[in-house]
Image (cartoon, rainbow, N blue to C red):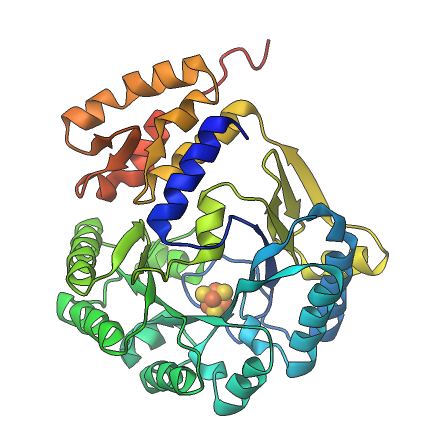
Length: 402
Ligand code: SF4
């Protein structure tokens, strides 16, 4: 995959992004604790905080054991979860001390922590100010109390707004806000109000997700019982379209299906995922990727801690086939505003280019895809069907079982 053609497109994308950083490896750390379970969430977390110290030690042990997997400078660190803002000052400093002792971090690295509004009091912000963190991703979801209650979020609307202003006052200007749309309680008026609010608060990055009902969540159970309405796909699509329109007027780039930013404020860490840049996955349920191999950590806090305490990694390794890597490239690149590069498709082999050129035709005729030079890009209408279109462009090795 490190062909000359992929290097050319990297340079092109770098210029479009307005980034000065080369694409450097990242570190993702999963902090698997939450105060309470949001009704729609199927991420890996525990609401028992009993083993936070043991988890911190295990995460530091894994960071040390994997240090040789990244030999270049680290360009981004992302503490996700779960709720990393639940960590104490002691745990946060221990993790960052371990990283700085064992890895070489670029001086301009993007260092993000996912936070929930109820954790971001003046004290926690002061602690984070003393840490290397330079970006917050805040799980706001809505500025309406009834909606937050419906989601079983731990914060209220006042905390959602206050924590943004407080973070900005403390010097954290590189903020990203998560919003959710498409749930039954969200009228269009409330949705427009949420969008106006984030624009008015001068937040430079927004991640917006349509509510997905995952199996084995409280929400899926309630819908099945009939105590909650199912998601209305038409309402969700209409709210997505209005989001795109309103943020475009406010000067935001729609740079990935779920992500919008003011120029130069793209998330470096996430953009690198979509570009196939290697990253380490640390913590229970975390995934890592080195360009060919995917590493999957066990999704159990107890097993993770016991393995790492015994000096063993708690991961399984999945070697990606050429077709797996191609399909992953299609899925991730098509969702971005830079689109899928046919030169890069060709670097997988002649047959990949021939089949893709044939497979995109019906979508171009339907005006769901357009071509710009060597790039295939989703049209405004195509953005509503991004995952379906990508799946139709996947290719499979018919001879794999031979
Ligand atoms: S805070 Fe985030 S990770 Fe925790 S339950 Fe809610 S959505 Fe899931």
